Length: 227
Image (cartoon, rainbow, N blue to C red; front, side):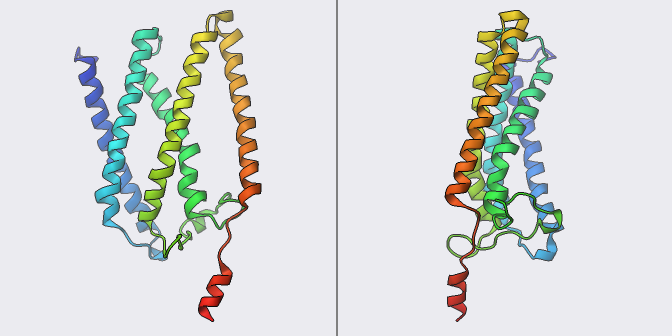
């Protein structure tokens, strides 16, 4: 865009480049994590590289393209003073990254791999990062199962989280920005929205922990099998 290219073409090319970078990071992260924890004898599944990684790259293109397009429209339609690269960092690098880390990572970690570390997978020491839950609903659990569960559960949850961030942020700006040069309405409204969601999150978390309890192993079944 800086060299007078078509805006749509520039958005597509930039998103494609970002997807290839994401694919490299995803591949090296999977292989590097498995290799660094070789003492736990976790195998490398080629299916992860051939199927799951390529699918996540396709999803990454959709996420990057829509995010960058949204930033472009905010600048062109709403007249935002920030340049496009800075808007991309704020919305893609910070907002979207925070949504993925805070909402998506628990599905991979405490909800799947480290369920047995109380409370609810929290406070895991780095020395035990390879001591994962090995038994699934039927048979042994593998990294392929974890990848499937994460993409099935964490992807939509992260998308809903980021969508809510965009929705409330745009409405907060549109409705309350004119009051007191932005400080009287937009800042206060943002603080109120954050406090309300903090209360709701705490209520849902407390209800889930009291209802379902921590992760437990089926010790009785295993003892009967050995007997």
